[in-house]
Image (cartoon, rainbow, N blue to C red):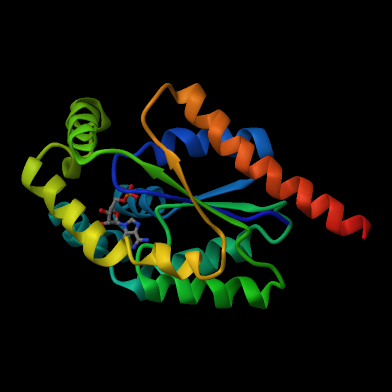
Length: 200
Ligand code: AMP
């Protein structure tokens, strides 16, 4: 199995790059943002609760997103691997993910972090807000709040994976193709290592 976390602040290109990588490597894409937005669209109780947090640029409670990830892992027992996009976003979520994967006798293999300047992120998000239909992308105050939540609660998740020697920063400014190539290079290295170990 091969499990990847695509890490980075809102607007860093995780969604765009995830679409390309799941296609290339045959992974199951698990985006907690997408899962929450479909709960909202279906007006489920979870979606109605989550909307209050999302509209303010706050994080949805850990137990809600961890439960969603647990269900999704169960639904895809035969997956070749998972690409986690927008999860984990807190140290508690990272610890819970470690435990869930351990129960499935697997682990996270790579955490690739897209690095983009804040100025460029705001520009991208406001641009995306014009067409995405996402209310959290149209209000600059909400966008700034999402950044401060990222700095305070999500950025520390990097340390969790640095300690496990799984973390690698990738420049997130450039063409979509250049960034995909840089991500693929890291993934290919890990997959080559996995293959070698299988022969040893
Ligand atoms: P995203 O599409 O990843 O930018 O997520 C949009 C919003 O959904 C975030 O601003 C949060 O309010 C919520 N959300 C998505 N993923 C998580 C997560 N792992 N933990 C908590 N809240 C989340």
